[in-house]
Length: 522
Image 1 (spheres, rainbow, N blue to C red):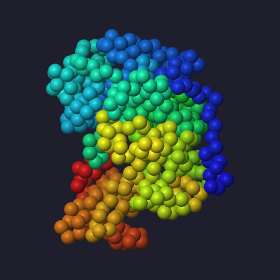
Image 2: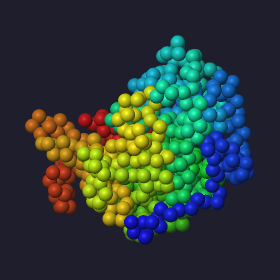
Image 3: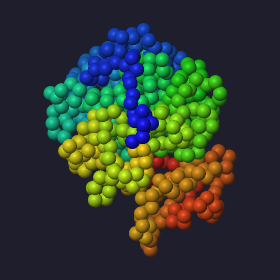
Image 4: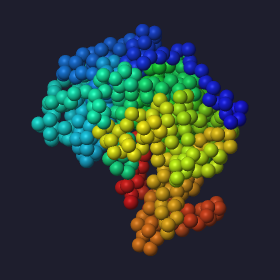
């Protein structure tokens, strides 16, 4: 490893950082330390840590009144607002297992979630929709309770016969050590099948965010502008938990709009955001010299070369983080390494307390640079397993804690990790494996294409052929297949990566976290 690489991962926590064994303990420590500091800004209201804590105590009391106890699962389907933050913190404070849900669940997804997870209590900030219907279609199991919460009308549904604590893979977790008990169940995006519930302990989440704050120097002077929901690791980990630990503040955007996001960032002096590449694209278009944003941190999917180049030309650092719901994040592009590589890299290093290795198809460890292999990760950030899904847990998690990410990657000469896409995200054409993410990367280089998804389409002779689904940038006319092939030929892309079928769409089907549901395109 080079000297600059070593410097990139030698990091010190901000003096404002609080610490503790549990998320609830950290929240209490924060409120004792800086009760009068602003924590949340939402819809024109500024709320201090102390004011939010009083609201949290009300929510704790409410959940106690309906009979919830330590280890019970609380599902939330709420907008990105104060009420949702309060409920999450109340779960932290009272030892309940919080399970935020995407507001975009369809009926099939909602029914699966209720049947698989069997939450003891659900709170929703609406009175209809698939999740409410999925619960109330089981009147022998769930009943609705009338209440108002935080001055807002909410729907609350409680399980008639409470499940005794959070039973993870058959084991009662209430009696475990405080930091090792389940604190949250975050659901995977469900891009290829029904989502899975990732069980995360206090220790998992705290390890992630202490390291995250160290990498990016996040402290009490920082103010986050957040456009992500709390059902996603970006909002849950890098929003609520990161801010709580640092003592900074967070501006909430209830419904995403690029213009509103920039307007609020300017109004409240937001110093950074954590988001996904689609939002980065909008922000860079709207960014103006003198804006308060000092850095953008992006996850969810890889950053494209054009986005990195645009951010570089503007002079706004754009850092890549890599992780999955099962361990978010475990690799980060550090500021030192980013600067040393001309602000044009997404390569990163494992965060503190985490080990990463690459293995080939035979399971042998890869140590040299530029040799692709599957990415495995081990450490405090790695989840406990999938809730009520021992088969999938055993498939991806070894007894000694190595998690198989299902992603491909390679190491650079100085030991940084570069991701190369999903192992399963392949088009198998005439027996040859073709990386769909690589084809997508070539397509995204076209100046008229805003989004691209590549899948294998069934072919009697070839097995599969390359199918490309694209969304054009605003105002750009639709491309045809020949134009795309001409572009690729002109840019030196070898023929095996050329799409064989092209579909131009107004939009691509996505999960609540913005990932493309490829199974709906095949």
